[in-house]
Length: 556
Image 1 (cartoon, helix red, strand yellow):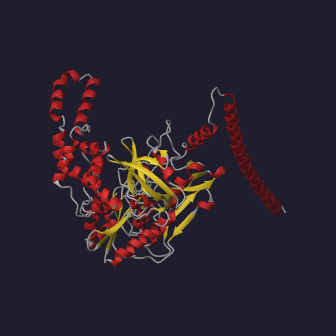
Image 2 (cartoon, one colour):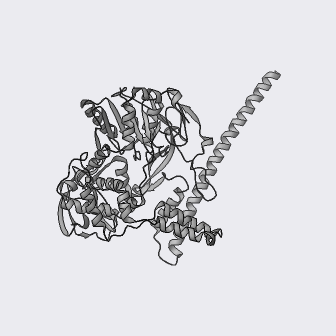
Image 3 (cartoon, one colour):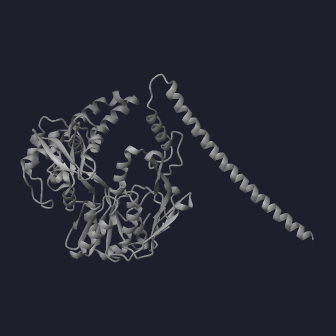
């Protein structure tokens, strides 16, 4: 009888605790909802009172948008508000599709101009060229307009006509175009580096990215390649599904590629390969760098985790956050971070913890001491918390200050315009070289143009002088500093000789782009790209591939 009473008491206690927990949870939820409702009401009241009482007229819509954006800045850079007027731009970023003329435009030296017409689309087919300066779009004078405004005027329903007036050199040209649906390829170039090695440049993960890569690989295999380089350098990522399908081209059906884990059960998903691979054995290198992010990191990381590819280049960006687009009122939407990516080894590629900020609101990378170890399929050690690290790291390319100055001040770009007007054709991208005569013409053309710069040594001496004055040593070493300054003061004429080779490379890219567009610049890079050379070298040595992919070779 006592046991029965005890059991009933125990059950009653458990029920009381459970009910208390439920009531507590319910109360917490209600408190949270009340807090949200209260603050929304305060915000709405504030805007109303400002509109009524503020001394000057206010733009309520602008103020609210500023408030929304300021609120979202407290979270992470990827959670953002997308008002109705920006919906088309957002659609382009996620799908790669829009209706327009098919040209990248931008502002150079205060003038809006064509920076790159996409091959096969209205702008290129109608004869618009790199460097054409916009004067009018239909009847609208656009010389003083922002680039974004001109871009909006160029876009419109497919199959509608538009007239563009541009300045080319001393000539004014009128061009009639018909807008059409623009689908930008995720693979602007693919080809053979040598008889055995194929190369695919993947620049985005918009709709059809996996299909674009598949078509390129099928074509390259028909040309007899037996090894492959997949280049995702500078690729900012995009659609997750496309990344999964690209990995599926190289690994068997039923394998995990990535999982997403967040606060809500609905976002906790494991993504696996669903098809038979196109080629699960071809020796594969993936090129990565510090601007490879998100979907690029999923592809590179998953292939590394399965020891299916060798990664060459530099450590990736470290974006392991998942965004979901949620519709709001009046055709606006918000892109919200809802989960984190985890690749097959179990590691998260996210490099910055946005939930932890210092007193000034700054965030920092995850320290090495807090990074965790994981293992690839073959047992190689890999770490989380800092993007994807390459198996073979290459050195960063550095350029002399004179080269930066010539490019930044648009002298290389402007000379490209001049050269293109004067020369109808050049050899193919792989055969073209900037001759000494062309370089001498460039140097002569630079005469009288401004491109001053500070060399690294000059900056070091300036810093020395500054700290010497601050620490009261300047009077003691003033004579030596002045002597150093005279010795290292740069000569533009000498730098044009010393750095002739790298300036020629910059000129070569600019000139090739005029005749062969984006595809030509990529093809030309196959000759001298350090990462590609390293990839070919490794792919040519099966023993080296095996050593890199074995557990003992991975050093951390």
